[in-house]
Amino acid sequence: MSLSIAPADNDQPASTGFSLTPELIQSILTHAKPLGHNESPDSLNLGFGFIYYGLVRALRPPHIVVIGSGYGFSVTCLALGLKDNGWGRLTFVDPSYSVLTDGPFKTVGGTAQWSDAARVKAHFGRFGVADLVTHHRLRSQDFFDGYAGLGLPEIDMAFIDGSHAYGDVRQDFLSTLRHSHKNTYMLMHDTNIYVRELLRHAGVKRWLRKVATHKDLFEVIDLPFSSGLAMVRVRENAAWKALRPPLV
Image 1 (tube, rainbow, N blue to C red):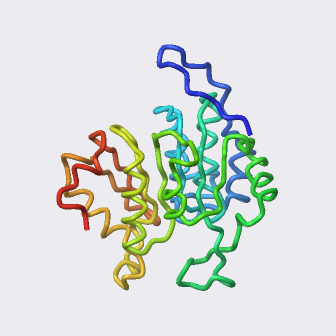
Image 2 (cartoon, rainbow, N blue to C red):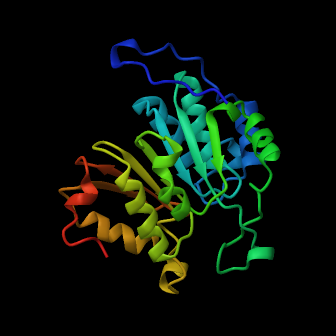
């Protein structure tokens, strides 16, 4: 796999084009199977997918980390932004649990989509982004525990969509934050699944409320459509050190 190096701000490469043709959008909707991203397949509308792609084009992040994905919708839309920018890399973390073999306490609707490296490469290859995506078949905690050893740079943009249990959402957010910096953008999916929140089967919204109280550290926008999407901008370098007392 070849990794692009971020150019200096005054040496931005020319765009390689605009990938989102009607044919590719149809392929994304068919094979990357968005789940709760406010999409509308009948009108070739990627919903939040356009936000993912547009943010990458506008902000030009060198390194994106995605935690969890059912069929790769967020990964694909974000990676297409990198492709059309002409540089950048995406690190994808998912242990590839299956609800059939691992049970509902480890995953909700998981299908072991990411168990075979060749199939993972082929899946993202159909969208032209296989060389930009590196998949780590790990639990997010294990991934972050070994982050330094992987030689990865700081995180410029993150998409958090792993386990929705409150403690796991909190851990994924704080672990991502430790490797982020001022003006990192952290996207959180499924902020609008109220029944699961009421049943304490999910805690994304509950965690987001905690984050939003720290206005000196974060700016938060929540889009309560379909399954919901939040965008969190980190306002300070080493923000995780400033959490006194820590978010709980």
